[in-house]
Image 1 (cartoon, rainbow, N blue to C red):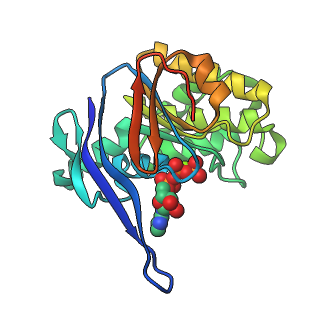
Image 2: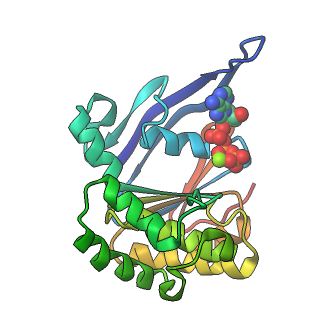
Length: 232
Ligand SMILES: Nc1ncnc2c1ncn2[C@@H]1O[C@H](COP(=O)(O)OP(=O)(O)OP(=O)(O)O)[C@@H](O)[C@H]1O
Ligand SMILES: [Mg+2]
């Protein structure tokens, strides 16, 4: 479903000296529909860059990103919108709007894509049930624990019914208890049919999952294991 094809990404730093950073160096791998893949590697290995290329926030320097066999950088704008809707993204710092309740945060993204009030009233409670936040809809982010904030952010990412969920270090700010909670939720989402790509540098987490692990080191894939153990 997704294919990174011989991707090289070189950042040209804006600061004095114009130092070039090779963030990805000849990266090729594919993700099948319904897979759960973890991308692991030290800080700076290129994990977030990989996600940014798929979200079209950055362009590859060379190489191509295919989504359903089509080069996404050759998409027309209509297809770009469809692509963005079919990928839900979750980040370490949640990115919830602080002046809106959980329900409003989710309703807001639905409104942006033109959902009616009726659809919002129908879908928001359903999605809160999936992430087990039924009781927290009327709370503001600052009234929630980190784990609850992340579940709210995942609910928001799921509201478009994306085919793929990208989770970039989603448990980076969480204690072990909430970390497990979020992992279970990602596994549940995967079992419901969504493709999940998880970026993390937490060895314990990845070992627990017993899913495919792609290891990046300094922008190169050094390992790709079906049921990996993360080791660096
Ligand atoms: N906009 C940018 N300009 C210049 N260099 C960048 C930019 N974004 C990332 N880099 C560099 O590219 C490399 C890969 O960064 P990336 O954010 O993909 O790593 P990461 O694996 O996600 O790391 P972390 O685990 O810390 O999140 C790093 O050396 C980083 O400093
Ligand atoms: Mg990162």
